[in-house]
Amino acid sequence: MTGAGTAALFMVKTKRGEIEIQNPSEGLESITRRFEFFSKTTGRREQITTDGDRVVVLVEFVDQGDGGLVKVALKIIVKPTKPLKHIVGTVVSSATDQNGVRTISIMQANGTVKEMQLGPDAELPEVGEVVTAFQGRSRAGEPQGGPPVAKGLVRAEKVRQRLEGFLEDLSGGDGEETSAAAEKRAKRVAKVAAILEKHASKQVEILQRVSQNSNLPPQAAGRVRAGLENAQGGLVAAKKKGAAAKSKAGGRSGSGGQGQSGRGNRR
Picture 1 (cartoon, rainbow, N blue to C red):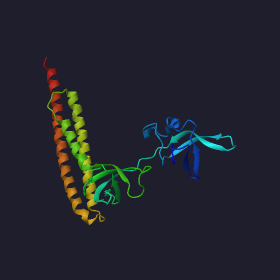
Picture 2 (picture 1 turned 45 degrees about the vertical axis):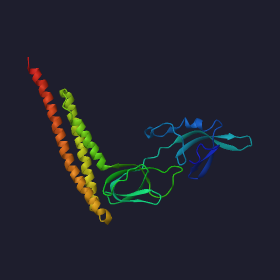
Picture 3 (picture 1 turned 90 degrees about the vertical axis):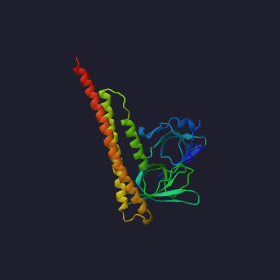
């Protein structure tokens, strides 16, 4: 779709070429309030179209008095666009051009390398870090060409640290609680500990595979090895913290149950 809502007409590109469609006399704004999606999982049910949207337009043929028929929009149905696959891998290079545009190269576990631009507010990861980058689609007005822009970037090390902090908060505190509450807490602690260990293990796995890849740039090899050592240490720490948290939570649950049992025997 091109030129949506900016003039008295807009163009829709089809397999057979472009079709000119008129806005209704009351304006396109009335149509934008009746937008429908093919899938309810796409989010909002109302949306203003932009250049590049995939749409289906229901039209009627209107005679303007000169014997010619024009297509006038009755309803616009916006087809949802599938999100682009996110990239998980190790940063093997980074560069900044003369315009200040920062680009990173991410080597995935299978050895493929993906270049991505970082937005102005994104934190620049270090070479040797495991990251998850979420690709964004270009919109009207954005420059075309070059590597895709990372609309979001998550650093695995930061995620591990947050999980450890959450686990510590969840297992902390010495206040009294019922046996049922203590048991529920113990289950939550065990679940978070499992997530933490799995995340740390995956971080090590990715770095191991990248460090053994023959296509790894020589200038990145040392930093990737250092990242691997750091991730291995993080995995050991994650296992210890998980075990300690589960032990603490389990002991609390057991004492709570015994306390209730003891009160029940005193008659």
